[in-house]
Image 1 (cartoon, one colour):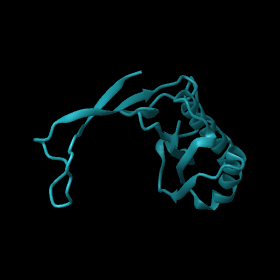
Image 2 (cartoon, rainbow, N blue to C red; image 1 turned 60 degrees about the horizontal axis):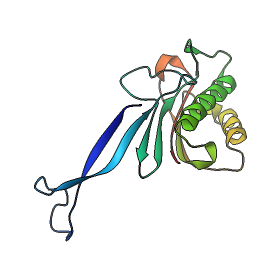
Image 3 (spheres, rainbow, N blue to C red; image 1 turned 30 degrees about the vertical axis):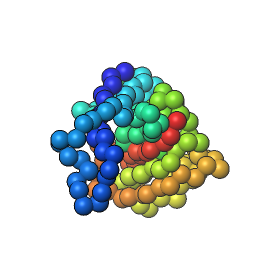
Image 4 (cartoon, rainbow, N blue to C red; image 1 turned 180 degrees about the vertical axis):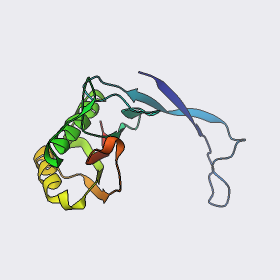
Length: 158
């Protein structure tokens, strides 16, 4: 996994009238970004990661998952229900590779091609998360990558 270290300013006497992120302030390592990569979910289809683990805060950011079946990464046929199931399966694979689980998901964003499919998506989503209910936004979009019907991104903790 690839890691990136972030620099954060140290400022002992912060005041609201003085810019906190001043280039003249000393810095210390505060966070490490680690790329999450698993063959159990589709490979990233562009210049992004499947997910990012931020330490020491323990946040996991999952990139938008679409209903591709690894390792060939073909779109699953059959409409919104199987596409939702496969998308959630891919989401879970990345989440678990990052060291977390579905019970620790904080928020998801669900993008759908047709909001008329909301009830079907909601039913599969409820089955997947069980009693856990992360914060969520659902948005209808004009088009998704590879003309799929759904995409889901999210944030979790370790």
